[in-house]
Length: 334
Image 1: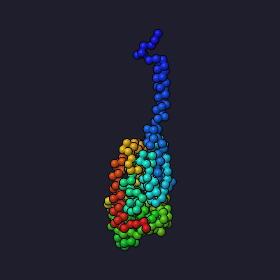
Image 2: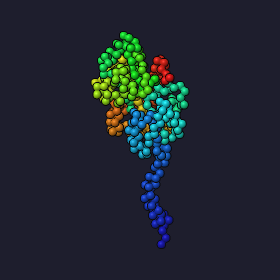
Image 3: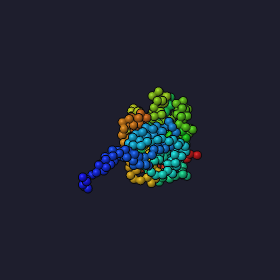
Image 4: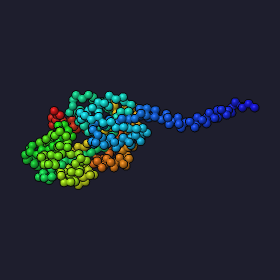
């Protein structure tokens, strides 16, 4: 007896059943093509060496980003030239989301210090987020006669240039922090540049130079061991790791805030939908309690608004701040 034309044949039924069973496998196989850059691994290029603050942030955030995106995120360190080697590499990359830059606060300073950079940092990148901020802390040698920031200011005003501070080099974060302090406090200090933060901090602990604007994470152990004394933190709020140390505003130095921070950026021309997906993955990663705990263990805190718009505004403000300081204080890297 022939099968009516409007009823499915056994062959059609079996074919449909087979397609239904195969559908999950097909979806799984096709899913990578729907990911960022076709689902291939995303490279997070870090502008500083392994073991440093930027590298630590990259290795904290990369696994959580990968989980949120459903694809792997690998860390690739390309240090050198105050972040410019990594920056140039990412600026030249295809803007498909496969290559991202994780930099440091030098990103906003470099345009003022290096007028002939290989790229225009204001135009070559698409901001995704600022991950975290880390305050500095003004420390002094354990035997230094000043007991407070007010004492330092009084000494510097009484004899301009008599109080020195160390830094890791001309144009470094510590140099800029000291220059801004001079401007906001109305004093003249003596800047002693070193070739690296380690030697500078060692000489402060030894009493060779009295002052240093240190990273909280790197200085915390020495402060607790009594090798240095903390005078003030450079953030608007007190640091969680140093709750008894006042802010600069609390000791009378107004409009002074110096933070170290880590932005994540993509090459310019990134499609809006890819930017949104990457930004969402970063936001979800930063909301992870383990990520928050690890950032705070380093003396910092996650940025309050992990959105591209907030990152763009913050970076623009930092660029303007340090351009004024570099120009007004005639700072150069030479």
